[in-house]
Amino acid sequence: MKKTKIAPARGRLGVLIPGFCGAISTTLVGGVEAVKAGESKPIGSLTQMGRIRVGKRTENRNPLIKDFVPLADLGDLVFGGWDIFDENLYQAALKAGVLERMQIEALRDRLSEFRPMKAVFSNKFVRNISGPNVKKGKTKYDLALQLAEDIENFKKKHGLDRAVMIWCASTEVYTKEQDVHSSLAKFEKGMKASHPAISPSMLYVWAALKSGVPFINGAPNLGVAIPAMVELAKKQGLPLAGSDYKTGQTLMKTIIAPGLKSRMLGISGWFSTNILGNRDGEVLDDPASFKTKEVSKLSVLETILKPEIFPDLYKDLYHKVRINYYPPRGDNKEGWDNIDIFGWLGYPMQIKVDFLCRDSILAAPLALDLVLFMDLARRAGLSGIQEWLSFFFKSPIHADEVYPENDLFVQLEKFENNLRYLMGETLITHLGVEYYK
Ligand SMILES: NC(=O)c1ccc[n+]([C@@H]2O[C@H](COP(=O)([O-])OP(=O)(O)OC[C@H]3O[C@@H](n4cnc5c(N)ncnc54)[C@H](O)[C@@H]3O)[C@@H](O)[C@H]2O)c1
Image 1: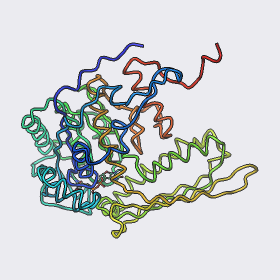
Image 2 (image 1 turned 120 degrees about the vertical axis):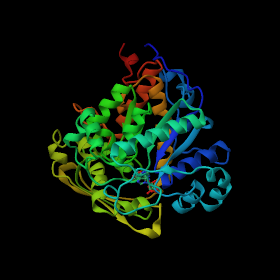
Image 3 (image 1 turned 90 degrees about the horizontal axis):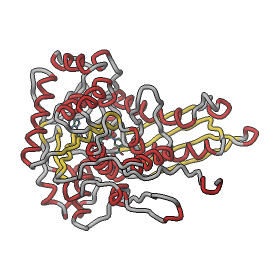
Image 4 (image 1 turned 135 degrees about the vertical axis):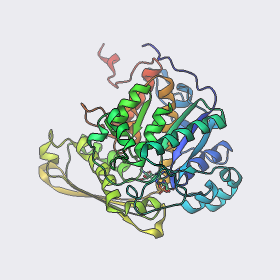
C-alpha cells in the first residue's frame, strides 16, 4: 500500500477555542501545561498514550500512535480563544472548579497569561448566561469578518502558519436546517442580511474556514453540519469534524449497546438521567439548548441496534434521556442508566449503571486528540467531513448517503485503519487469512 504524502508538522500550531474560559478549555490548557512541565500524565489521550498494532500479530509491532503518524508536539501548541467573560484562564479555571486549587496555583503564572478575545454571542442562541466581552457589529457578516481578523492577528502575533479551531463554547438552542444553510451563496447572503437562523457558532465556522483553519465542533450545535459549511470546507481543501464530544453517559451507552446486540439480547427500555452542576448544566437547563443535546444523545441507539433489521429485539425500545441541573455537584456529574433487557424466550432482566464521572476530565483529552488529528488530516490533504474521527463524537457528522457510525468498536477500527492507510500499512481486518491458505 502506498503511503500518503503528509507535510511535516514544522513550526508551531495555533489552537483557537471559542469558549476559552469554560470548563473543558481551562482543563485542556491547564492539563497540557501540567503535562509539558512533567507534573501529570496525559491519561485518556490516544495521541499521547495510545498504541496501534501494525502488521501481523506475530510481528509484535505496537508503536505509540504519536511515533507512527507525524503529529504536532505538545510544546508547539499555542492556545488562544474567545469568551463572553473577560477573565484570564487562571481565574476561569478557579471558577470552573475542575482542577484542584493546588494544581491551579502551581500553574498560576502560565494560565494568567491567557486572556480571551471578544466573543460573537447572542442571547437568542444561548439564553441562560450573559457576559460583557462581546463584539459589536452592524451585521452577522461584519461580526464574522471581525473573527477572521482576530485569527489573522493571532497567527501574525505568534508567527504561526497552521491553526485549528475547536468549539468548546456553550450548546446553542435547537435549530433546524433551513434554506439559508443549504449553500454557501445563500449563507453568505444571509450573513449580510443578519438572517435569524444563522447562529454565532456558524459565524465562527465560516471565519475559520475562510482563514484556512480546520474546524472541530465539540457541542451538538448545527454549526458545522450544514451544507454551506461542507461546501466551504471542500472549496478551501479543509477538514471538518463533529459533533459533541462523546464522554460520560453516551460513551458508556456506545460501549454497552454493541455488546448486548452482539449476543442477540433484546432491549425494551433504556432510561438515562444525570445530575450536573457546572455552567454547561446551567445552559442545558434551558429547554431549547437541552433539545439540541437530547437529539444528539438519543440518536446513538438507533444506528447501533438497527431495529429495522432486528425488530424482535429492538423495535419497541423506549429510550429516554434527562439532564438535571444540580449546582452542588459542579463538574462532577452522576449519570444513572436503567436498561431493561430480555433474553432466551423473552425473560426480562435489568442492568443498572451509576457512573460518577468528571465531565471535563473526560472531555479535555478528546479535545487535545481532535486538534492533533485534524492538523494531521490537514497536512495529509484530507478535506470535508472526517468520518474516521467519529470515535470521538456523540453525534458524528457524516455524508448524506450513509448513516452515522455510533458503535465505539466499529469507530475504533475505522479510526485505526485510517491511520494505517495514511502510513501505507496493511489494513487489519482480523480475518486471520493465514490459517485458510
Ligand atoms: N464536558 C463534557 O463532557 C462535554 C461533552 C460533550 C459536549 N460538551 C459541550 O462542550 C461545550 C463546552 O462544555 P463546558 O463544560 O466547557 O462548558 P462551560 O459552560 O464551562 O464553557 C462554555 C464557555 O463558552 C462560553 N461561550 C458561550 N457562548 C460563546 C460564544 N458564542 N463565543 C465564545 N464563548 C462562548 C461561555 O461563556 C463559557 O465560558 C458545551 O457546549 C458542552 O455541551 C461537553
